[in-house]
Every structure is written in structure tokens, then in C-alpha cells.
Length: 114
Image (cartoon, rainbow, N blue to C red; front, top):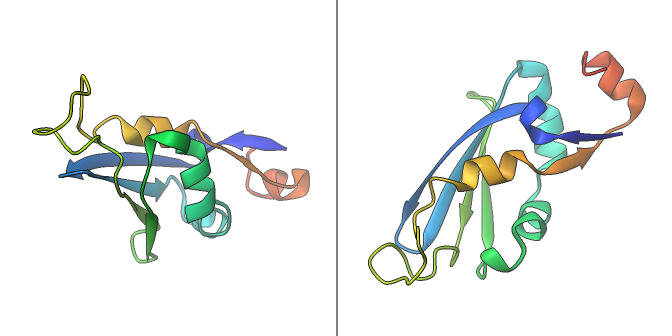
């Protein structure tokens, strides 16, 4: 089944220059291994498409049950250089939580998602 990341995590984001920073935090401890497995740099890059022109880096924070992503070259040069209406990374967390991941029905049932 497909499930929206919003059902598994909450997120915060910000920016530094031309890089958006997105932290994804599991809503429950048992969701963290699923996030580690499914929310990969490749999937995050594909989810954002042309918005992220550079590399996507992922950092695992198991003590916080969180993942942190750096989305390089995603802000049109940054707030002081870009012609974008809002060249800051504050909305990237909401956008990432709209990403869907695929999990087996039995796993979703075991995690209490269905």
C-alpha cells in the first residue's frame, strides 16, 4: 500500500544560502526503521524533481528517531540572490511530508496504520 509520509513523521525545515535543510522526525519510535529504509536520498531527490538541482545528503539521527536532509542548490541561489518569490527553505518540510512510500499491507497492519 502507499502511505503519505505525513502519517509517519513530522518535519521542520530551514535554509542556509542555496541549501534547504529538512528534518524528518518519526511520530512513533517504531516508525523510524521504516523512515530509514524508505526515505532515501534518491527518493527525496525524485520527489522534489527539478526544484533540487544539486545533491541530496542524508544524515541519520537514531537517538532522535530522525533523518536530516540537505537539499543543495534548491533555493535559486538563496534569499539574497534569487528572483524566486520565496527563496527560503521553510516550506520544504510540508512538501516532503506529501511524499508517498510503499509498504506491505501486513507491515502497515503491524504498525497500526490500517
